[in-house]
Image (cartoon, rainbow, N blue to C red; front, side, top):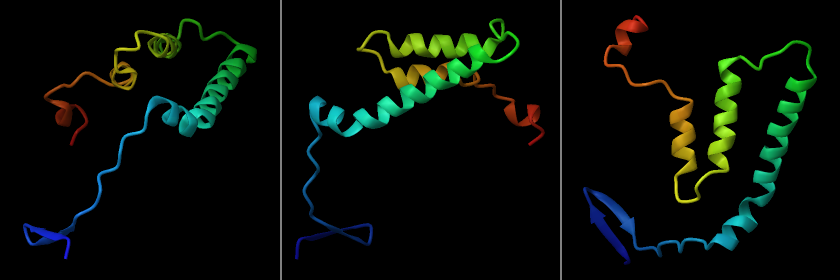
Length: 100
């Protein structure tokens, strides 16, 4: 009772979960987000205190751009933009490049 069979698999009828509203998401995610921001801040502090200079390092530019994306337009997908920022462009011959 209450089961539907699709491709030989029994599926139980279950209620679809109702998406959380923004306040509920914030309640659930706040401490984790706060911790991650603190972790990033501590890493940047360590970079600034360390001997030497990495201001010209391309990775610092990527980190800076990633932080700018986080503070940018709320209508854009931040995760997708940051994923693309830190990803390589697709190259059709990637297998040959990596000897695979």
